[in-house]
Image (cartoon, rainbow, N blue to C red):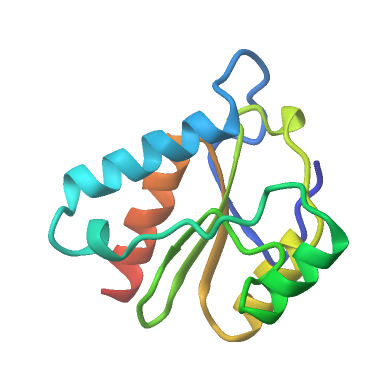
Length: 135
């Protein structure tokens, strides 16, 4: 997996080895955020569901209803918005899905805090960087 030079990457890009699946890392990250910030960030942090395989007709309808193909795994509204794509700690076991980089690039162009986090620990590292820099 390659990362564009404009995209901040949190975590150890040299790590290779056993690691949880991406969905488990995401659950862990949301649990940590909601535990640490139960009345603020934990309330507004969200994951848009975009991964499901569906027919062309259903995908077109969902896009018309406002679904954004490639939307990132973790979005926290703010100024700037926090937009984080979560991958496995060993990023060689992950891949880019359709439109994920397009979504990140679009958010980057609008001055969102955009990043890729390699595992739940890296999500928290990115979140702290966002909070330290912008809040």
